[in-house]
Length: 477
Length: 100
Image (cartoon, rainbow over all chains, first blue to last red; front, side, top):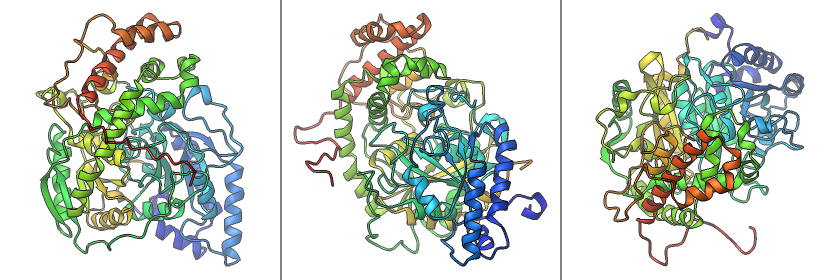
């Protein structure tokens, strides 16, 4: 459907939207008003919104419009509205971390990512909902935020994914053209897959975390959710780079080699074991599309290392420390999800030796991963084993057929890819690759080598040019 | 046996619910030589300590769930430590005497 038919500008690829803004065919003020209006109506119905920027957004949009009129065009995000997961600090709006105990929290500064987007001329229109404390206390149900469960625009009986719930659903419903999310272990990839949008998790250290809620200092990353891979690339270009306020950041090193004309993609062994049939079929179709421009090698195994053990231990130890005051004061009683009210008490009991052992094993993961990426440009698997979970049912009771006949010692390649990618800090993308049960989207997950975001977005652009799933719209939006 | 997903994930060491994986994503290593605490027994040492420290904040139901979690933590700990490392293998930390 054309934008003229629906009145929505936010299903349009960012470059096209930017060209219209630059040529003054579209006003940044009109775009901000459109976003604010949609967020206030559809966004609230989807539980995607925490705070609207209101007049502050309109002022920023007017400034952008005036600058562009004067001939000072800042680039493709100039005058483009966006939303941010409510864990990045903003001086003009509360920053709630999705959690009741922080509902009135106010910072006196903007997070670096917010400042960089302002420098690029983008207009912050809303703080978007998220799972409380980015899921660090162990939630087991979609209803884990004071804003309620993030609802999926494709089918509101289902979750939009977490922990970047609002960014996933707001982009999917065309309420904003892009949003900033965060990932510690899966929190961009999951909502991107469940909501049917594209999510790019950058290399650890490429994007400053200054002003973002800390859950795990060694795992947290900020990145975009948007319509397509090209949109994500534009956003990452604007937010990447060294920041003195975040000592883990670096300027992206110059690529050691140019992207291959025919990229080499490895399919993880067991990638479709114990997944929903539609997930398996859509993944096979994705491989067929990828073969049109890439070399695809099947049955590639990761080194036999305990990715899940390490990720869980590190999240518990760092998260327990990050929220020690809240946990030890009994403040977790105010959290929404049942599991979050007691989960912190086991996290803070994680032995220091276990944490260090996990960090030593993490170091050991680097060499085999580097060796694998001497041969391949990307590792592929379905983003998730299922479509989104139903709202109102605990995650462990959702899609019970997946557990049928599954051996007790089953290792999920899908889970391992999310875990190892985050443990080594390498970039990944999730792109819509079809639909499954209940009309819900499924996703294709690709992991690339460190600072090889350009490889991912190049593959993503070509894949999406051929498949067009990223342009599909939820019914009614 | 563990009663909650969180405890199951902890003991299977899948992942915390950050990514909300419904499936155990990391089973114990096949060759793990270390025995793990039997599930379903009375609270272990760490669980007792957790109860002592934090019990005042929790309901009886939550305390039972915490016991489960702690059981999962102890199992995860045993499995993690079963992966042997040499003395020279350092952790993935980047401490420097002077901040760069």
